[in-house]
Amino acid sequence: NAGVTQTPKFRILKIGQSMTLQCAQDMNHNYMYWYRQDPGMGLKLIYYSVGAGITDKGEVPNGYNVSRSTTEDFPLRLELAAPSQTSVYFCASFSGQGHEQYFGPGTRLTVT
Amino acid sequence: QKEVEQNSGPLSVPEGAIASLNCTYSDRGSQSFFWYRQYSGKSPELIMSIYSNGDKEDGRFTAQLNKASQYVSLLIRDSQPSDSATYLCAVKGTAGNKLTFGGGTRVLVKP
Image (spheres, rainbow over the protein chains, first blue to last red):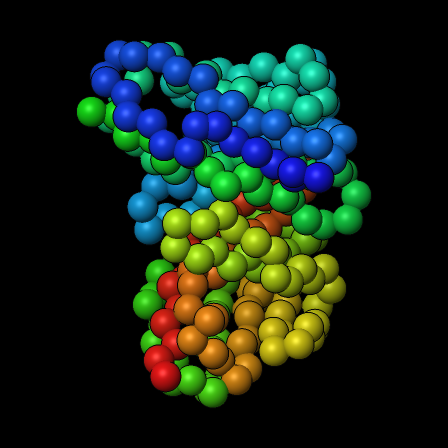
């Protein structure tokens, strides 16, 4: 199993550009999450999904959108990128049982 | 706003000593508590979970929970340089399978 995979690993965007961060998991987990982590800070929940076709906002959803058309994939869309979105983005998944969220390796995004 | 608070550190500990990390949370209804370790440039990894008041030991790690005081702690015994990392406290609140993370405590273990 590859676990949780994220692409790209690094990206530099100009202000106003758009992009999609990809996240996929092969563990058949129902729950998937997107977090952002600013330097020296904890993780903030952006959006999450409890299953295909169901998404909901987290703590910091402004400037982002998500979709969940399949169990495996949970892409995060940034529209009109702003410098405040410079951060490391982590995707995670959870089976709904037990206690562990599995994290992907992260995407480091810089908006200039 | 449900909050989880940690001292940002750095917590400097001599090799072989005990590192003590603290975390407080605001959602009194929280039931599940987790400690994640995050090495620089890497993703978080779960090292401990605790659900009941008292202590839970796993190897060199001990998690302590006091729900009345809304306080959870992590002890690292016989600290090793490889324990140098940021430790994130996470709390699962009453609204679904979502975690709220603290800001993390950076631990430095000096040989």
